[in-house]
Length: 329
Length: 287
Ligand SMILES: Nc1ncnc2c1ncn2[C@@H]1O[C@H](COP(=O)(O)OP(=O)(O)OP(=O)(O)O)[C@@H](O)[C@H]1O
Ligand SMILES: [Mg+2]
Image (cartoon, rainbow over all chains, first blue to last red):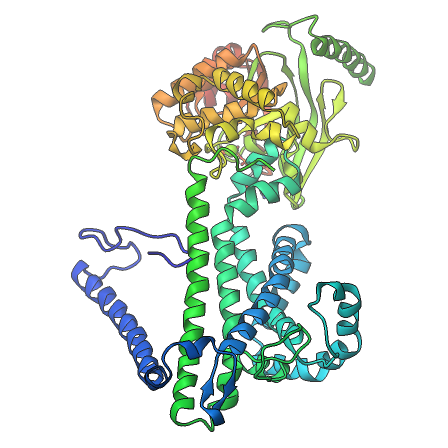
């Protein structure tokens, strides 16, 4: 099984085949590879087992249904995770809803449209943004964005999209929409940098082949470059989604930390990671165990998103074989 | 000199109109130029790669470009369908006429030009995400053809013309990468033919193929003469001699820019060259 975005190499470990870059004897080469794979596998298993053991008391006292219950109230021994699961999914959805079109557009611009010098400057900027620590984004969100959202963005959204029912309630600044926006800004550099790199891997001969039969630049992008980079673009999406799902500090600073299910995108809410960071310090007993359980749930959500992306990639590649309708608009 | 050029151009216009109306179907030997290169130079980043090339490409003939590596054959060929437009550092000077129109004129739409002057590349480059059928009709789709009947007809006729129809008619929906290298190159030829170009540019179309596949492409080139005018770059002297009617020999000058040494009927170039350098090259003495 291959990681999303990385084509599978097969036969690398077969006897008699050595990588041209290493001159290690075959036996040593194999031992080294197997050993590092084993270390990696052991770490993953250790990690999973340790979390599962810590979470186990919560499952034995509460069963399984607590995961999808609505109320988090440690004083009453209620540890419903539903508000946090929803908060996690909603903030990530907002972030990706913005990041996919804008990230892809910026990547295309960087790879194909802007002049060379601008490309260098913007490319460096994108890489710098990717290196900013998340707490800085969070503080910037609180100090600079929250007032802006309260005064302008949220009133605007309410009046323009109020009919959707998604923007009811008071304008607070902090809440789901601000958290989603901060996440969007945080994952954008990843989206742009990875997408740009995978777009650049589409062979020039493919691009020229399309131009040579009279395709416009737009058609080349839509029919050749983007389909050709599809696997890698889904990889970029998965990476960015993973980052949005797991982001902790920045979200905790701007989401308003409410333990109730949000009824509007303007409402304060919480995510699984923000729940963890806000409660872990003082938690003990079943609550501590439930927090580990929340960690497990987050892990499962991350794996699910990853698997769905993988299935989508495989389906896209499968349908490519034998499909006659890739060009059909 | 200028007057002479203008008057020949006027003749070209007339011939061209006739050609388009289909009243006259010039065959090999009628010496009707469909393309004229006049003092064409190409520079990359201000450095000349090809300089001052002038010759005519005659209708329904095969014109070959030969010369050692780096002499600018590919560069010159790509100037004929404005492929250099996509290379930021590239500049093209001089005039390239297609019929009566300057292909570098501001009014010329490069995408339209490329449907009139098609191109086949050195390495077969079918679109990997598309079926054989979709590859064959890709150019028509790009140009907005939607009607299934039209597409089917064009797919069949271009695949027939590329001598591929019989072997793929039962698997049109298969992935293009299921074909052999030679078949893929013929698919690329079909793809180029489907938009019915007047001129087909081929850059070493057989250099990635085995001798059998090469032979079939060479036969195909000869068969295609009725349908299109071909300009082919080749490293293979025998190939140039086998398939082409006219031959242009390029060589690097002292400033490393490629320059046209000799142009003329292929047989003449190979047996009775005017320039001693041509003689040496076609006899394999250098390059
Ligand atoms: N995109 C480019 N940018 C800069 N220089 C280029 C570019 N393409 C070609 N050149 C230069 O132009 C010169 C001619 O190259 P070209 O590829 O046309 O030669 P060729 O005759 O086709 O050679 P070959 O037989 O090896 O294919 C070379 O010096 C090459 O370095
Ligand atoms: Mg070349």
